[in-house]
Length: 287
Image (cartoon, rainbow, N blue to C red; front, top):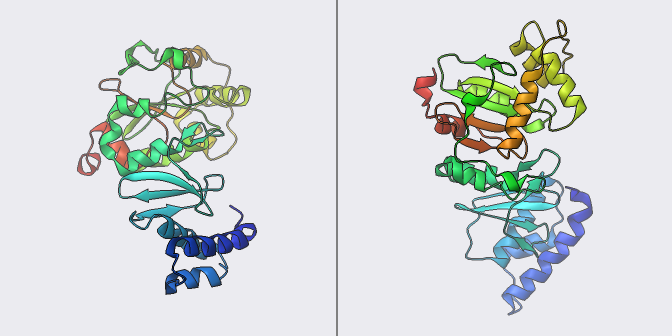
């Protein structure tokens, strides 16, 4: 977000909102401070946006406010309600916000953070089924038959004593990289199955990882942007099987997490705590 370019407009808008809202010609000390001061950095900008929202929606408590990473919008949480507003607090948007680069449903991720009970697989998939680019003609079933996948095409890593999760990922997906760190924190057992969402580059990296002397180490090297070299040509048909499986079951992007015990599916980045809930694994059990 460009804070410099929006300072004047936010300042002017706050003045308009305050005058329109209070109407009697008297502005509170809070409104005066917001109108007469120009924010010097991001923290003060957030303060101004918060003031504008409070003037527009005086009966709506603001639990959290975040204006970074939403393309000029601000994410507003009011208890367990989520909505978006522009930096001048004029336009309010209620709906799903997608990151087209990472193919992630940002709204679903936040709603699951606010409401962990939504981690029921079917509800989580419904959160992303209308995502642009998703093959809605072949929507994921409530549970997918992981047993149909061949042993080839899988990279095993993580806590061998933990609950097992199957993760469909792409080495060029930023959220997949972030998810790896959360899977480590959750101390689950991971069967990672690469699919090439981002094309030829992703496929070449996946082949190098699968054919590496130590695929698990190569996987983490790939996410760390370290060079990965295949030990020698090997059978990569397992990668084709991964991609065919993903298409068949309507996976619209990466990452996709499948619970090995019953095939339940959630899509997108999740925190370690959410992963433990989905896997049915407590912190104590993961130690």
